[in-house]
Structure formats: C-alpha cells, structure tokens
View 1 (cartoon, one colour):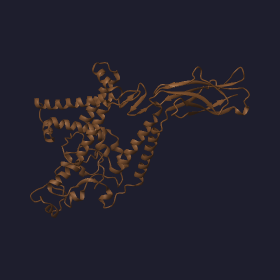
View 2 (cartoon, rainbow, N blue to C red):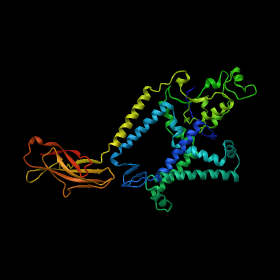
View 3 (tube, helix red, strand yellow):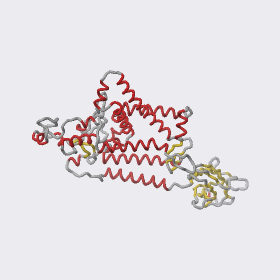
View 4 (tube, rainbow, N blue to C red):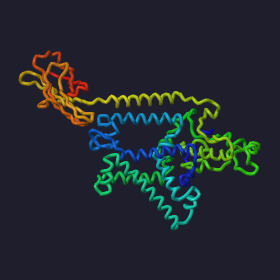
Length: 468
C-alpha cells in the first residue's frame, strides 16, 4: 500500500463523470443518504406537543431567544451547551478520522450527500456515464437542450427546497411556507432562501468535487490525524502490479496463472475504480487529498474480481501496519486521547443538560452608590436579581435572606410569579440596622428563593453586603 500523498490535486479542467456501481459500500451510502434526507426535510414538519411553546419538534426561535429540540428548551443562559456540542463534534471527527480516515467526508458530509443526489438526478435524466459524455461532446440541439435543461431544473427544485427547508427551522413551518408563497414572509427568509438555493446548486451541481478538493480545509489537514494504524481506502500494489506491472485481459493474459507466470498483477487496468470515483482520482496512485474514502472504488474492484473469479480485496480498507503484516493498534496514545476527551466532553454535556435547574438565578449589586446610610443610621444595599423559569410550567417564588441580620424590601412584590420559560428582574433592597460592628464592613450572605411548589428545592444566591 502506498500512502504517498499526491502534491497537487487532479486537473480541474477535466470534468468528472461518475459511473454507477453496486456493492456493500454503495448500499451503506444509500441508506445514509435516505436517512439524512428524511431527517433534514422531515424535522420541521414533525409535531411535538409542549405545554408552552410551538408544537414543532425542532425550532430555533431567534426572536424569542429559545431553541426547541424535542423535549429540551435551550435558553440564552445555556449557550455554553453549543460550545460543548461543537467540542464533541470536533473530537468525534478527530477520533473517527484517526481510526478510519475520511469516512465523514465519504458518507456524512453535506457536500457529499447533496452531490450524490445531484449525480443521481443527472444519471436519471441524461443516462449512464458514456451517455453523459456523448451528450456533452455533442452539438447543441433540441435533445441536448431538453436533457440539460431538465437536469438544471431538477437541480434547481432540489436546491430551492433545501434552502426553504433550512428557513423552516427558524419558525413555524406551516405558517412560514404559507407566508413565503404569498409574499408575506420576512425579508430575511427570502434572502436566506435565495442565497442557499444558489450555493446548493453551485456546490452540488457545478463545483462538485472541486469543493472537496479546493475549498474544504479538511482535505488539507487530514494527514495530521493519520498514522500507520489508520485504516483507509488503499490499493494493494504488490498484488495488483506484480513484478511487471498491470495489464489488460488478453488471450495470453486471461487466466490468473498466465498472468502470474508473466509477472503481471491481478489489476486488469479496466479503469472501473477511476470511473466510479466522485472526485475523479486513481486510487492506484496512492493516498491523495482528493480521496474522500467513500469506498466506491472498493465496490467497483470487488465487482471485477468477482467476475474474474479471483479473490476480492485488491482495493480495500487497510493500514500501513496491516500491509506490512502487523496488527493494528487501535488504542494508540492519539486515539486514546481523542476517545477520553470525547467521553469526558459528552459526559459533561449530558450531565449539564440532565441537571438543569428549574430556576436559573443571577444577582448584580447596584454600585452607584455601593451603599446608602439612611437617616436613622441603618445601611442599605441595592441589588438586581434575575430569575429565569427553565420549565414549561408557571412558578411562584418567595425571596428571603440568609446569613445576615437585615431586612429585605422588594417593594410591593410579596411572591415572584414566573411564567413558563420567562425571565423577571427583581429590584431588592437589603437594609441593616445601625450598631453593626466595624469589622463587618463586608459580609457575605445569600438570597433564598423558596418555591411554592413543594416538589422543587429552594435556591440560594450568593451576594455581598457593604457598609461604611
């Protein structure tokens, strides 16, 4: 197996015409494709009953500053969850890449998924690879205009629906669709849909493999995650080339015994592995930055080997260690580090979500002035207490003091009533009677929020009291 990276990607002026192939990895890609599209296009329409809030399973309410994810409601104070999710996604990407190469690019990347769909549309309208090549080389006529126009129209419909679906995640899907087609939707929705329609059509239909090769930075720094134990799509050069190289099947080189006697390898140089590659590379040239490890070349080669009656695996997932006759070390220091980091980040995020308190609190002391001496000699500090209801039920809370001999004044508010998923700012005054010791210039104490609902626990909020 050769892992020498090609210094430059293929010539972008040469158009790629991927050929269809069947096999294990093609079926895996198809299942993922169908699942991904079902989730993406279907989620905005999936109903979800809530006591308070929209009946839409996934909705990012920017105006209301709430993200609805099935039974979870994310509010601004939980924005660190997003950071945790991004850390988990990055570590998962590094971990998987270190073990199995660029399988994310080959199976899960949006660019790969949409390009695959656009390839299928092109094949459905224009025909298989030879027919598409002939069509592009032929002069413009009615048939070519019809096929090319039909392809672009179908691409445009898919690109438009992709863009519109993205917009539906940010509001009530049914209402937004109706308003969009009646000209009553927000201008941001029209702008977003137009931009995403253009970029989806361009990236998946026009740029295609050039997006992966020249625009995506992941192809450039992937090698930093590879080592000799990383399994990747590889060509068995020793078996395929033999002592005298590869050669097509002829009368004298038809049987395997004949080829071995002539020093010729098992590769019959049919080019099927190149024809099915969505980025147009030749895997027999070794590891290249354009290879997305989709493994379609494995299906192609296995098909040919099966037809010849020879052993499969001339192109396969392998590693340098395996090619040298060794055993893969899955638990290398790098993989263990990625794995532990992934487990830790996941555990912290899950714990944070599961232990989300019903009431989020924050206190800010009014510092101008820091304290006030009242005419009777008592000292008063003022505070702003923010209370956030994190549940979908209304809550009632009473405020009191702890660890300080003082009185609490919240104006006319005896009980703080919080609507579901709402915030309230309470202005509180803490007054300490005259005669306190000079040593108590600064005193730590706590506000206590006691719920009317006995199933909830009181919440303590740390604060500090200042006096002359």
